[in-house]
Image 1: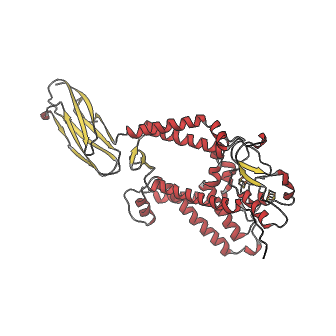
Image 2: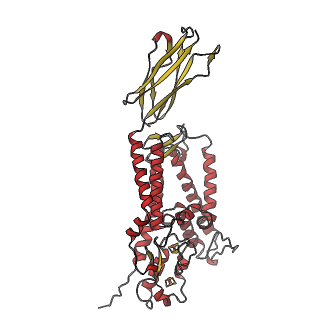
Image 3: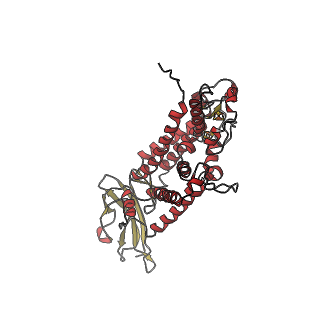
Length: 427
Ligand code: SF4
Ligand code: SF4
């Protein structure tokens, strides 16, 4: 029988595909969230669309509750797993890694598009062909065009985006959108072709913000120093790190994003080597190793996350209250600009509808004789969320006195509200 050498490669077999899945899933999520109507900005209606319901800043419980809930969850995440978002989810890192791999494949392993040390771009001699440059350029441009489309999903419906990419007319689209898109593509192309991980290393404030919550208990790279003789003449893990970190000298506040690529590299090396015994020297670990024993991930986490947990609960309760007390419509009444001989005779009833589905509304005036006023229209129809004005005109020969009357707006969906108006007639 042929003896089979059992190879332990946990990092290599799980971490890398898991991370790639997470990166692709995040990209899909970034498009699916606005495309499904879960969260979209509606500049025309002046608010945020959540599941086809318009949320204004005045819906304070919904807005504040939502952000407190999300922010506190994120703070707990930073505290537990550090800057994992950067390594496993961030679209900037995803596209930078992809662009690096593509450049390596087409121009050679040492090809770098930009180096702030002033080092010139190095291209493998056998790959110095214009076809390689052309293929690289076209693929980077395609990626920039796709990436520049993603933000548009946060402002337009999928139907409008389809009209945009297929050059069809759509009234929803802004006239200058093609120019805005071209500028976005140009910025994205510079980012993907040249900037790449320089953004992560030197420009990203969000990464610094995440690191500010990091402690010795946070997820980090653990190095088995007792077998450091394996590292003689080896640089494999450092080469695998796109942030140029040496994972054998972990510092608490280093800029590691816990991507695990160095773990995979070392595991693969040990699996392939006949000389190096045992698993790789690196692994992802939670807990303070200086204390001799790990305190346990969950114990350590909840010990530090009490305030954030409280904030999460408060945020969730505020959000639920916001959902329960949500008003699908609202209206205000104000004096019109039309003054007649120094007298106010016209009012505007401004009705705002906040749901993206058709509805009909009825407007009534209560407490004022029908012969004393004219209402421009009693019924209004909304096809989607928006605003409509209805004029209320009072007769110019209204007998002198103070008039108190109520304007009532009712929707077919059961919503109604009232506005009490006081009008003084000079006679
Ligand atoms: S890849 Fe492993 S063996 Fe090589 S230097 Fe890094 S930690 Fe040491
Ligand atoms: S040190 Fe390892 S885990 Fe940290 S960023 Fe570099 S490759 Fe990723």
